[in-house]
Structure formats: structure tokens, C-alpha cells
Amino acid sequence: MGAAEVRGDTAGLEGLLREVRRQVSRESEPDAREVLDWLHRHTGADFALVAEDGGTVESSTAGFPRGILPSLAPLLARLSGGQLAAAVTQADAWNVRCEVLGVSESRAVLVAAARPVLSREAGALISHTGSVLTLLRRARDGERTWRGFQSKARQVRFGVLSALLVGEPLLARRMTTGAVPPLLEADRLRVYLLHCSPADRDRIVRAHQDPSGYHGPDLMVHCPVFKEHVICLIADNAGAQGGNRSGGRTGGRGEALRRLVRDNPGYALGVSAPHPLGGTAEAYGQAAHALAAARTMPGRVVSYEGQTTLDGVLPRGPALAWACAVLRPLGSLPKTTVDITRLLMHMPRTAVARLLDLSRNTVTAHIRRAERALGVDLADVRCRATVDLALALTKGGTACESDDPHPPGLDDLLHTEPAAAWARTFLLPLQAPQRRTLQAWIDANTDGRQAARRLGISRNTVRAHLRTAEAHLRRDLLTAGAGIHDVVHALHISTAPAA
Image (cartoon, rainbow, N blue to C red; front, side, top):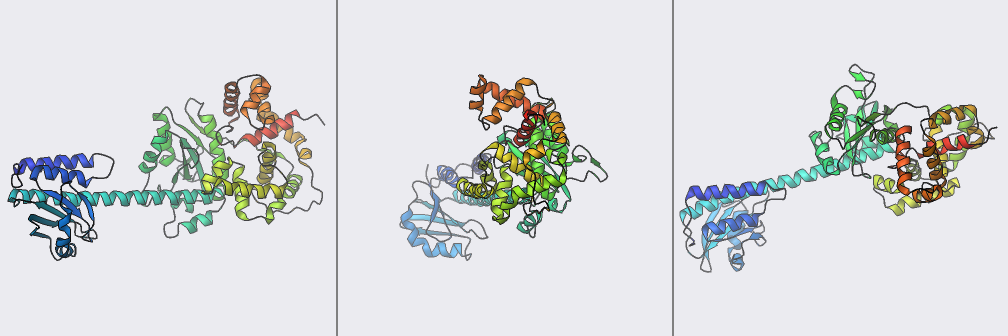
């Protein structure tokens, strides 16, 4: 096709529109090279997009004569500088047409080069294409800006969650100065833990996101540990008009999440009881327990039921004295070490590392420091259960004091009738096979393979018994393992010889 031979205006514009539709219909960014190649096929000219500096070629057709650019430098500078919008000239026997793309920060120039003189129709099609390229570039820049905003918003939401999980709502406020999420103004919150398809997480979170990057009065965060979980922090006003006892506000985000589960058979939802902002870690643990039960329930939605906890039945004075004695060594350690130790009670150390955006080696170093101070091995499930009970008794604090110079031992506290009654109630839903499996699993330090070997059954059977126990006890044992410590104490109490 000669340089001056162009198809009819209507056909050319229709082809240009088809190319634009093809570009914007795909998920990747628009490709200027494909548009330039299309324009080359319809005009016979070769094209280049030259950056504002006048020397950098952003994209071009294969046959574009780059050797002419040095001689065009003064003209390109005037175009990029806003002194001209378009120009026609010659360079080394090439007929050149230049048009500026955009009128703001990015003022790239579309350069057309052809041996014959470009026809009026070719010039019109080049101008139309230049306008389209401007729009595509703006769309590309807008897409990049939008992605950058989404990434930053996600990081801020994650930072708020991390601060709340270590009991620091004031830190969360300082992190978001100037754009404090409404959630941090709430007195209480519930954690809704949604199990969904990993491919659906972005869509779900974006569907509820507001222009500020939050979710109205709530917050939805990608779980950093489990790719199929969305952690939803929902402001609770159950005591206010319009609230309800099973999940906070009537309607709103909580009801939307329930509808998602109802409409998607593979989804499940665990809901915590209401907690103050500083109790977010406890709320998350409750939601994890509820989710473990929800996966086996017909409706796949379970709200955490306020069960009596072991720390709530032990004699307050002696139990607090014991807990203070256990935790006193942590008082001399850095706060980061204490925070990591607290989180370790609710999730594996790899999860703690991801949650705090620390390396596993750093987390391990903090844990070893805590182990040396406490004189325990936190890799041992029974040791973790002991520390967890002490933290529960002190409400997560370590700077507690007790007037008792001779605190009791843990066995003295557990070998009491209130503790025995708690253990009987806790283990009551279990049948003998599940109880034996749980005991062997704890004895094997939660190693399923070793527990299977001791019991003479398959590892899959062990896992099936544990899943059944999760549902009956409404405790998470296998995902984050937040419910293991209750099992440790209940089995210990139930197997202890009578006093």
C-alpha cells in the first residue's frame, strides 16, 4: 500500500475503534506498539512514540528510521515544551509528521515517517490515532495510579490489623493520622473470619471498599497467612438500637458476608463475640474457633458461643499469683519480644512472621529470647499451653504484681473441683476414639504421623478424628491451632489421679 493510499475514512475509523476495544477489553495495560502497527498497515508510514526528552523512543514500528531523530531534536523540544501542537517537516528524504500526545505532565510526540508525502486522509487518521493513544496512555496511567492506591490501602489496612492484634489501638490511630478509619472510633468490634476461594478475595474486598480505602465503619483485610481467609473487623453496636446478639448490626457488612456464604457452597464464616479494640487478638481466636466448626455445619456460619474458660473458673487470687510468677521474666524483655510471644499463643511462628512482616529468623530470635527468660521450650505444646494460661489470667499483661510470696504451682490450681468440672464439660462432646486420638496427638507434640504410629492407625484417620473433634469442641486445632491449649489442659485435668 502506498503512503498516500488510505482506506475510506469510515472504514479507517471503524478499524481504529475495533483496535481500541480490543486493547481495553483485556486485563493487561494497553500496548502502544500494537496500535502503531495497526496504523502502519493502514497508512504505509512508520511510527514512533518519542518521550518528552526528545531522544527516548517509547515504542515504534519495526521500520521506523531512528536515525532521523537527532535532526528532529529541536522540533521535538518545541513540541514537548508546548510551543507547538503539530508540525510537518522533512528529514533525510523522509516526510515527517509530528503530533503531541497529551497536554499535561507527559507530552510524548507521535512521529510519522514516510517516503511519499502523506495524504490528507492519512493525516486525519494519524490525528485520530494520536487522540486515541492519548486516551489509552491516560487510561494506563490511571490504571497504574489505581493499582498503586489499592496496594497502599491494603498495606494500611494490614498495618491497622497488626497494631490491633498486639493490643495497640493508639498505635493504629497514629499510623493513620489524617485518615483514621471509622472502625478505630468504635468501642467494640467483632471479627468475622471468612473462608472463601483465594481467587475471590480481591473481588470481595474491593466490592465493599469505599473511596478512602476502608470499608465504611469496618475493615476487611487479606489474611497474610491463609490465602483462603479474609479477616473482617466489624464495628459492633449490639447494645444500640438495631443491633442483634448474634453478630452486631442488623444488616450491614455482617449480613452481606452471611449472604456470600449462603450463595457460595464452598464458603464458611466464623464470628467472634464483641471485644474492645485492644482485645482483637482474642476476637480473632474466637472467630478461628467458630470457623473450624462452621466448615462442618449445614449453614456454614457459626457465631462463637461464650463458653466458660479455664482462667475464669480458677481461684482468682492464687491463679493470678501463679501467672505473675510465670510471666515476671518477660517484664525485662523488649515489647516486640513480648508481642511475638503473645501472638505465638494463637498462631504458628511462620504466621507470626508474615503478620508482622518480619523474617522467620527474626521471629525465632525473639522466641528464643523469651524461652531463655521463661525457662521453657515454646516449641512444646504443653509449655505453650502453660504460658497461654498465664497470659489469659493476666489479660495479656506481663507487668503484674501479686502479694503472695509463695504462689501455688499449676498442678495445685488444676487439681481443684472447679477445674475438674470445667474439663468434664469441655470434653463431654467427644467420643472415646476422638479423645484417644487427641491424647496421642498431644503426647506426640501435635505430630500427626507420630500419633498415628502410636495408635496403629493411618495419618488420615488421625486427621479425620481431629476434624471431628474441632466440630464438637468448636475449637480450631488444625488451621492456626488456637484451640490446642484448651485441649492440653482439659486432658491433663481429666487424666490426673484423684486427690
